[in-house]
Length: 162
Ligand code: GDP
Ligand code: MG
Image (cartoon, rainbow, N blue to C red; front, top):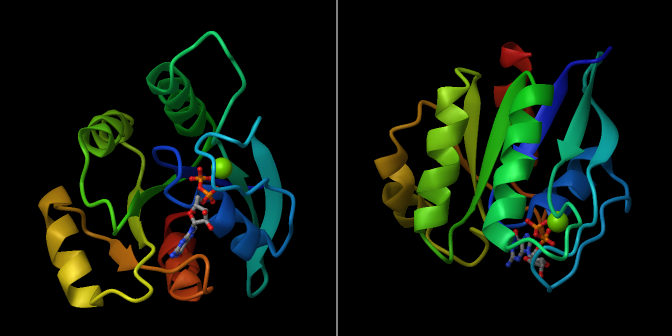
């Protein structure tokens, strides 16, 4: 079984866009509508010779459930399956209460977490990073999934943790 890297975060932060970049596929459904991805998606990824799986946990179906309940279930799945957790946040939205709730649960797992500050395109990267310094995370990287920026650096940060 290959090691698994999970992309975790609230809806619409860019998890599926990042998944597509990392796996160079169109497997994950990307849309403007929050929560549109219907299930987990696995994709193969590698850095150099080192293969691993990336999982996009966004958007389990469950029409009767609220987005908070769905997101909580995705977080648990990611924690169960992954060796490394990539916590994706939206630089344009800043830190929302749901981000803090997700991060608290990720931390309880004791697994390594890397924060990917997404949508930094067109923003002052240092200012964006400063806001998220409140996370107090060792590894916080600015990325733009839509523009494929920072994603190699993200993989290089993930690799030693696998
Ligand atoms: P998910 O719900 O977390 O899977 O988010 P998606 O990948 O579906 O992306 C949600 C929206 O954010 C879409 O409209 C994407 O085009 C947009 N988006 C994703 N990544 C970026 C980025 O790096 N920069 C900008 N400006 N928009 C992005
Ligand atoms: Mg998605």
